[in-house]
Amino acid sequence: MAGIVVSPLARIAEMAVRHGCREMLSLIARGQEFHRPAVINGARHLTIGINDIIFAGTGDLVAPQEVHVEQIIGFARAWERTQPLLVHCWMGISRSPAAALIAALAVEPDQDDRELVERLRRVSPYATPNARLVEIGDTALSRSGRLIAAVSAIGRGADADGNAPFLLPLRPERAPDAD
Picture 1 (tube, rainbow, N blue to C red):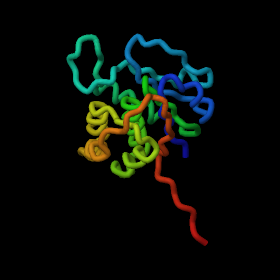
Picture 2 (cartoon, helix red, strand yellow):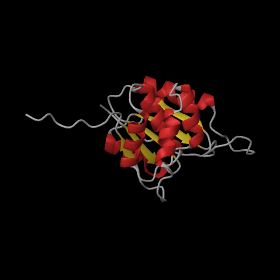
Picture 3 (spheres, rainbow, N blue to C red):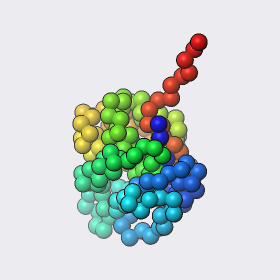
């Protein structure tokens, strides 16, 4: 089963080609220009104009809102899952890991929130999912606080330079059957 590739903006073309991605979710500040990689289907590219902040009322900055999370959920549920989904923000550390968690739960809702978030930490010691996106996603996906608690439990990720893309498996890796 395909997973979710989380990437900083600077490496989206490389990651799209390396992982065979054809669909992409961009969480980037309004007005920030970038080029969609040619391998990404333009009809399956969604750009959500939000800043990496956790509170509203900050002038021209756009805080994540319920409508943005609903867009993430809708986009994820329309994902074909034959190839990995590419999710990116500026650094690949806060907005995109949060969106990856939301997308994973949107398409695989029966999984355990804590195990999913621990899987995120295993593949990225740097991820610090945006708390506002996580909180809104928890409510929108009826997680009853489980996603918020799981993200809180892993704490802040290690300091990073924004150059650490990763692949988040949708489900835990199964151990091979012993014969």
